[in-house]
Image 1: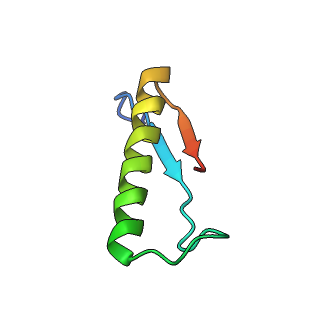
Image 2 (image 1 turned 135 degrees about the vertical axis):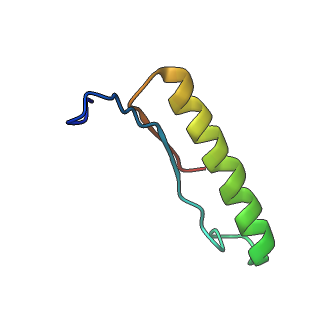
Image 3 (image 1 turned 120 degrees about the vertical axis):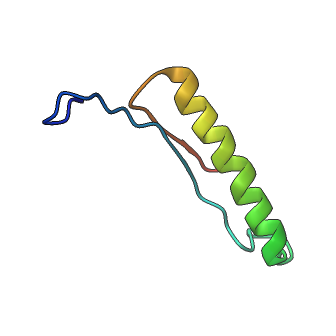
Length: 61
């Protein structure tokens, strides 16, 4: 994508959905949920960057 000044912009996004208390499991602490969210989002972002520019990758579990 080109901006009006001629400079280029690309965007890679990693998306993730984390259940706070998945079915059949006991509830997790907020820290555990955030750690899981961060790890999965990081993996999704790395997958997007590996796949090329202007990508969106989601990881559900």
